[in-house]
Length: 455
Image (cartoon, rainbow, N blue to C red):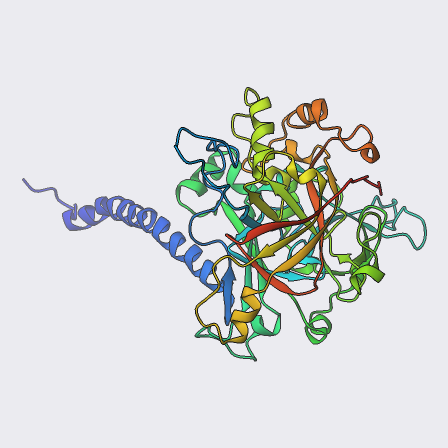
């Protein structure tokens, strides 16, 4: 049958165009997740610092068995011969490069005058209330910024950190590399606030992997004076408790999404300890005349190093397991986690020694002599606990009462702390340099009474 005036080939082409468009759209949609994944992988590789190695973050956690019940050291068994007491050991080492954010677990940590190297060298801060004309409302000469912790913003628990230090053994190492000149890098990662939206566009972006679940940014870890000048970091006072040390304002590296994720009204900034402006530690710390140098710390609350006894936290967990079945010791943000002593034995410690348990084989090397050496620590006082451990470090959710309520029911043990409960011990290193390892043994050198002195 023929249809005069009708071009069948043109009609066929016209009908096929919608099909071609649909096929092209389908192919594009199918390719988008692959393309987005490749882009995110490229971004991750670009953030990885050159000429550096990552500190911690690899392998299984030494705290993976922290919830397993263990008998007290020296407890008798049904064996014919009574077992010898197990040694007291360093169970875990943790540092928190950004104050109140997620920590980094290490197998080996360097001791520095401020505590463990890289611990609490950064802190987020809030700009104090401003006036209508944009000026600071605080008194003239007073700091414009105040430190920020999980006490004010529990979501900081979800902000992760990676540490990358210069390493001559790295295949990309060069003294001229930007990240090497920066003294390494700290990579800060937080949940993308756009990834939790409920709109159709948000859900489509997630399904197509266009919207990353997390956002990361890199900050120089330990910049030299030249890098500080090159990047134009201003030095500003940042109030932390009763101190207001000059600190480097490194907020220029922060993406605007971080402010939205934290949900804070006042502007948030990122600060780093300025070398030569560390905070001096007094109160219960050993005096300068005794140590030969003045104890200092970075952005830690009060003292350089925080010690927790795993048995003490396990005992607390048994008392509140109906509310918190698994009380993570990392809620208490310790640096040194020890295993072996009975619960609360640490309350009367005054001085301890950490000794290398398994020195390396190259006994004639300088590294061996340093690693095999023992390191002494002054146990300055008990740790007076605030409500920060009520925040679950895995979810950032604050429990309305625990463990603060249970602690206050039986751990008001220090007359100097008043109504505040105590758990853990604060320490000051007796030497300004050294190295400690997971598995090192703990020796008790001195005991005595403690009396907490408030700030």
